[in-house]
Amino acid sequence: MSSQNINKNESDLWLSFIEGENEAFSSLYRLCYPKLYAYGCRLGMSDAEVRDVIQDIFLKIYTRPELVKDRFTIRAFLFASIKNAYINLGNYGDRLVAIQNISDFEFTFSVENNALEEKEERENMSALIKRILDGLTPRQREIIYLRFLHQMDYKEIAVIMNLSEQAARNLTHRAMDKLRKENDTGFLILILFCLKSII
Image (cartoon, rainbow, N blue to C red; front, side, top):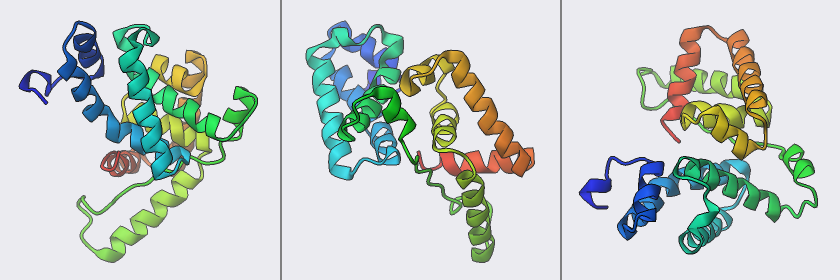
């Protein structure tokens, strides 16, 4: 990755690529690959499936950059493409039916790299976090993942999850309310810290 691309985000790299800097495309791929891979796996795709899908998506936008409406939609476009590929792999005839039939969204977490020193304490915390996350619906887990771990705005989330922006806000608020009923604010921050450590 060239030094001028190191600190660029997805939209900046996409703009550089559109303006003729081919190295920016490689940088975009390297930046996005782990995030897209993790998202595909959490949706339920196998290792081979998600790797193939990512390759196909990047080949498509390299040869047809006009598919991306503008530089600020590139991240949402990539995540939505992963989601669409997952739906297509399920051979659903109707996109709405497909979305409603996503039965799980895997949310992994780690408490290894924080201030909890005792093994038993870490195990208890892991069990508690798992119970709280299991209390969310798959859609709620997905929106928490996109909103807080990837810091996406509601416009991006709406594209990825096929929602209106208001519906994305409502779903996020319902998920957060559910989490708050289970824990105090400090524990909520801890949960998000543990999750963020393994995007």
